[in-house]
Amino acid sequence: MIKVNENYLKIQPSYLFSEIARRVSSFQKENPDVEICRLGIGDVTLPLPRACIDVFHKAVDEMADESTFRGYGPEQGYGFLREKIAREDFQSRGADISPDEIFVSDGAKCDVGNIQEIFASDIKVAIPDPVYPVYLDTNVMAGRAGSFHKGRYDGIVYLDCTGENGYLPDLPKEHAGLIYLCFPNNPTGATITREGLTRWVEYARENKALILYDAAYEAFIGDKDLPRSIYEIDDAREVAIEFRSYSKTAGFTGVRCAYTVVPKECRAYTERNEKQLLHGLWNRRQSTKTNGVSYPVQRAAEAVYCQEGKAQVRELIAYYMRNADLIRKEMTGLGFDCTGGENSPYIWVDVREDSWAMFDTLLRKGGVVCTPGAGFGRCGEGHIRISAFNSFQNVQKALKRIRDLFTPGAKTQARRE
Ligand code: MLT
Image (cartoon, rainbow, N blue to C red; front, side, top):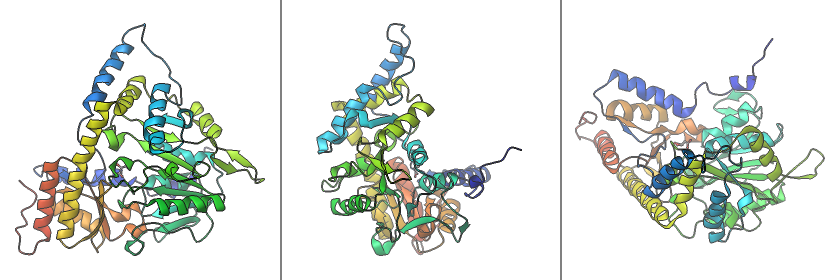
């Protein structure tokens, strides 16, 4: 008899963003004339930077010529890209990371989902609530969670992020071996200071724990005092793995390119309490299970670091941040408390009512898609997340419809333009 992995029976039957897509598509079928404004999933709408496109084309042409054609590349990524990453993303900010500590991949989502494979199945995992659902779901799939009741799994250490603590997780009250942190945060848009992050690094060192640091949104940090990498914090190399992505930074959501940093000193422990370095384990996992990212895509990612590429990426970020600023101001003006939207493309809005109900109201009465906070965890209830990834015109349109819905006496003809 073939048996299933019953851990899969414990998770919600549908992934959050698939469920939202399903609801939106069924609404669109019933209402084909409604022009929907999508501020739900954080998917970019602007095209790739010109500098990336140019080298992308050139690299495809190289594949058409026998003398420049390339077959399998290094599973860890090509040296040309890893060298640029180390220099531009880390060394230039005083973080001591070398090219061979970088593992290029087809997405931060895959990496944050896969990384838990190199840890024991009986470790305690600390996960903020609300949280990007991939961290929790992949640990449930791997058997690190017990049964689910009242919106929570037994066996997981939840770190509540609420208005009271500024949506910043406090250090765990019970011991946790593996800790997920994401800054700027998805979904709340909250950021962490150098001092705040130092406390986490110290916690991990004192408690023999490890931090998985998701920095997929670091490019949106405008405040020069905020850390963009955990390796800007002293002594983090031993206790942290960091994830980065070109998806939101340079518009690669459809192209797929990201990377993970595993410093050589980064460690966990064996059953017998012996130190075990993780770099070799992740290298073993990646070289067994993936052949990496295509050559043209890595060339396109490399172009992010040339002078024009850097300038074009800055423009993309500035464009979305103008949206974020507008969303935050408008929602605040309507009387909602908001976090994020300042060093982050997400605005976390305290709507003080059932978040799926609010999602339905915005969709059905306004034709606007947001993400219901409850989809990110129990502490997300009462909130919605609005994404700044859309055209400025669509953001303005969506905000006008929301204003019409929430301004007493305003006309509620919001959906059909
Ligand atoms: C989000 O909307 O949270 C992200 O786009 C999801 C992702 O990056 O996988």
